[in-house]
Image 1 (cartoon, helix red, strand yellow):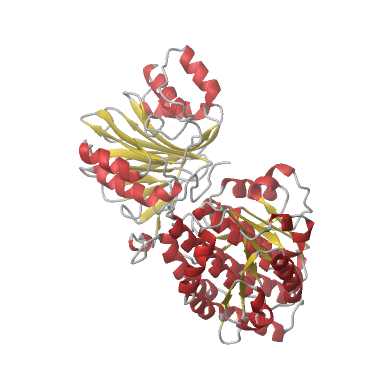
Image 2: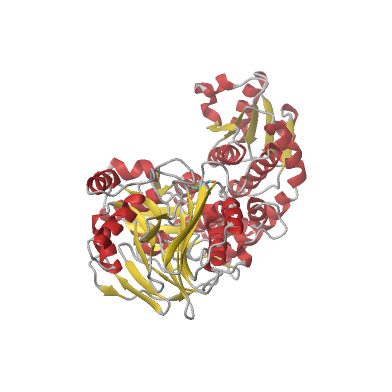
Length: 607
Ligand code: M6R
């Protein structure tokens, strides 16, 4: 959840590190820090809060040097404060860390009893003290680090700097991602390729257990057994431009508005316009032989899985289990060999999703991923990956990645249904045509931005907001509630409309806006009855539907937004947009930090 960067560059490395940290701030933003080597000594600047505070500190007290490491933190152990901010350092070694050292208490006791004095509440400091201890036993930096790594339990990506070692940096990864950027007499380390976008486009990704000794001339990498290994250098297409807000006030707004384009890009990888068919890449398993599919993810990606369950079961006629990765990974679910386990993740680094993937591999499942970040861990560990083409998603609230995940899942469903004979050629064409309409219909929905912005006045004043829907609209209700709570901090819940009478309806009074997700589909009449029930109890209903739905029910609603009439198959993809826009404008009215909401980080790489 933290972002780390390290550079052996040219003079004024602190500015490069600050720029890199800006690109990493989405990973955590409760404090930040940079350490450089100047005349052989470790110099540090740290600040609590956003990166901008660190920038001000460095402006007042510039940091010199041509080698350095930097960190942006999402606190796990120790409150967010300057004292607990990374880099942690002694006069001989400085470390930035992403992950959690699980045996830090035991190591700390041991090091304290041998005389080391700790200055922070973090788990990370044991790494610094351990390496320092090894150095004072006479070990050279590389051996001192190697011996320390052997003692660490838990997850980490590290960048390590040593006093008097102007030409040396060490990087190590176990559990948390780390990559090396290759340049001309300039080398760098970063949590991901985004961090290095301004420094290098030639990237090699460390494998789990790798550690690398980096000098200005290159890097040597060893694996977990200490053997020298080669890690391929790839050229990335990421540019700094892709990571700017353009003319939008927030990344979230930009990402919402990119959806027609990126959905189209994602769709193009599957859709053949000549015969209106969907084709998947060559699969390392036979779809006909799959008896059960398990879909696993977290947060918004899990809601994509929920929608896919409706599609797989109704259209492809195959049983699907879905689960939240953090629950699944510890349940020890028995799985019949030869099933398909499909993991959905924007970042491809979510710790629980990754752990669930490794569990399923041990259970003899075929492993597939739907991943937005290429070369992420899930991307590399899955047997087959369906990449979404949403581009870098920087706002913490997931928007364009979600709709691209849905488009990808929809294509997989159609292809599965065809192979298994669950749909005819005509039905395939009907469903494929429906998906090809999505980019244009998404663009139409973006034209409702103004009316959704006005509606957000109703939400901004509310203490609680409910979202309801049935069938594949139910996960959209959950997603709408998640979006609203994560960026506006308003309490919101999503319910299956049919469940209201089993308890949640007790929450309803005149002060509670109820947002109804109700395309006119096969379940519309059922949802309509639920709307009448909440209206009878005084709820302020905000109705999201199409012209037919609004004609049937609009008079019961306080407000309605008319969305395009679309095939019910693709309605959940499109109905995601108005709930994103509503959450966005509500958060603008509340004045919250939309792209970096409190307590959250973009990729959850710790449990
Ligand atoms: O990178 P992933 O898709 O694996 O992330 C999963 C969740 O952490 C993520 O969707 C989270 O819920 C978002 N903040 C939701 O907007």
